[in-house]
Image 1 (tube, helix red, strand yellow):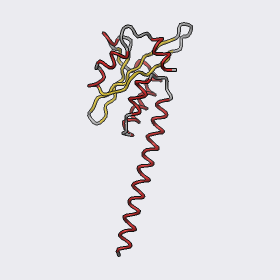
Image 2 (cartoon, rainbow, N blue to C red):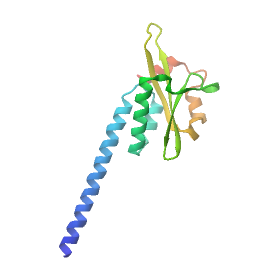
Image 3 (cartoon, helix red, strand yellow):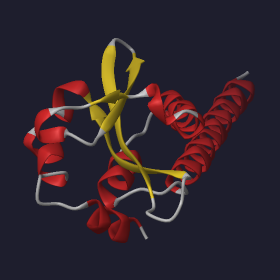
Image 4 (cartoon, one colour):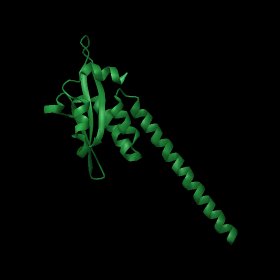
Amino acid sequence: MYFLKNMIKSNRSENVSSDSNDLENRRDIIRTRLLQYPSIRHFKNSIKRIKDEHLLMKILVKVEEVLNDYTCGDKKRGDLAGIRAAEITYKGIYYRLAYIAYSDDDSTEINILFIYFGSRENYYSKKLKKIFKGNTSLNKLRRESK
């Protein structure tokens, strides 16, 4: 009887560790896919900090939606003019995905550059305004993304 209890406990712990490894692998796959899109380091850092797989999946879906139709995000005004923001709601918290849609001078193709991801509460903070201040040019952001 004692042997069976220990065997069951060891199997449970093995299952838990394999489940956590699978979860970590899935998170890494989603994160890697998100980081392949054109973005600046602020976006990459905000994605790397996220541990919740479901939130990462929602972000991936929204990123692909933005890539298909860049007008799905709202245009921002004032200090954030030129930025578009797509909304994501997860567990009652509102998040914003900030991006810029631009075209090169000699092309009609629209390019998307992801800038930042964060909760709505932090989204309008000085950090995002600092990233895209009036003196920060789009060319500088493009160079940083490469």
